[in-house]
Image (tube, rainbow, N blue to C red; front, side, top):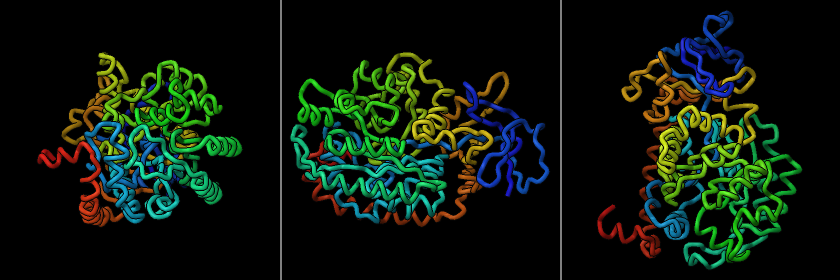
Length: 475
């Protein structure tokens, strides 16, 4: 079927700016875009379906370049704690009570939320990611850049003090590598699935395993998707293992891993010199502004990487940290935080942050030949946004397009009313076509209540800052 969205305002992301076209049309057939341009230039002959885009913006689907959707059932369980406690004392005691079916249900909930707010590609990063591909992404018809986490830590981290070094098990790493290789084999020619290597962080894998990952990734010309320099906890582990004068970036440089294959997530515990070293060596970066602001109280160095000529995408990370899987929220957050950080309201304006949320994410995932902009020949991953919603009124195009700042600063994301992935409608007129979202939400509520109750005793013994807060009745 050939379909076209007509009478719409296009954000194509072609060229240096946003590639805005008033009175625009985008058409697609067989999963690919076959026309982008002015309505007067479009031939409606042989079009099977016309969608009227009046009072709408039509743009590429958003790319959530780094996310852990599985723990979404723990939403609201690990906020407002000291960074040093977040992993071991806050999220750990709750996550230990999740079963594999809870991760699938949490992923369904997170992906539904993301789809509702215009995300068409998810950079899923988790252990046993194949389970989520099989049970969530493929049934939902959603594009995914899938990364199997390679983690060799064998200790129960919530019982460790910050300076106690994690014990590593090389066999655990080999099993994760084997899972990764099976994913590459199974989805090598997959239409909606891309695969990456995923050592979780420098403090969680051995040098031997990192060298193995590096060699395999080079052979496949694949990305190495990795948390890099993500805070005090990691820094203490690296200094304990490699020496007080070293850092994550210095060790990665020594291991010859600072190159175009490395996709570095977070990067906020780095010096200015280290950031420049990374961009000089073509390392791509993903910023997760809401998560890192919530967990670390830090602004991710997105603007610094951009100023150094780096390529940057955005991600939502995980719901227990920052609350949502919503890329409009991420675009707004990084723009406002960066303005505040530099006391400069001109920093990261919407014409830059929108690009980060679409094309930037596609570029860091090495998928910009397929997605990230509205161009003939690319996959038809398209969303429409209803500009008639009260928070987006007025919407004007003369003397300038005020809907550009409004999309970043005023949108909630839920003004998205059509989501098309690979030419197929997933959300149409605000209704999912083949996803039972109401059933997922009902099951998630029921299971979430049980998990929190089941974890209550262990959580209460964790020594987490929030335990005292809860006992005082503040939450």
